[in-house]
Amino acid sequence: MGLLCRHDHVLFLANMWTAGEKQFYALVLIDALMKEIPCHWQVGLLYDIACQLHRALIKWKYLDVWLPRLQFATSVFHAYGHQWIWGLSDGEGCERLWACLRKLIPVLRVTGVRKYT
Picture 1: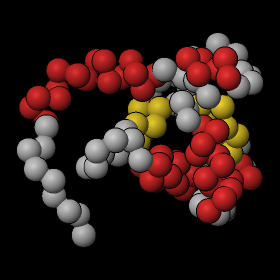
Picture 2 (picture 1 turned 135 degrees about the horizontal axis):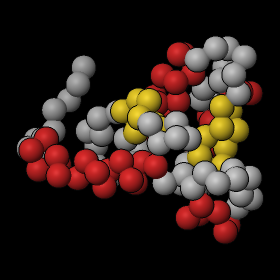
Picture 3 (picture 1 turned 90 degrees about the horizontal axis):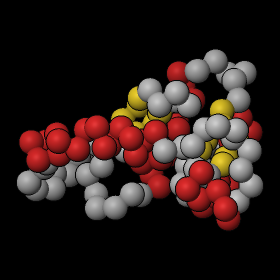
């Protein structure tokens, strides 16, 4: 899973070792970003399921220290069900990144699940 800036440059990557896109990958990426930027910066997060992630952060009090500095929006593909306030950002930078990297998938694929401790 990747975290890209609005110019589609990779900032952080997380190795997904479970099947499916789990919220904890997004939480780790957000936490890593927030630890690296100045404490007065506000951050806009454009994510397909931003509304679900935002609701989970509030409900379970995850990333409470960062939450006041975060604004959530959905990508253009999902914008019809939400308020789209992000101008010309289409939020599909990760999709373009994965399309460019797809030739690496066969050579980097893990053949078994390894538990990290």
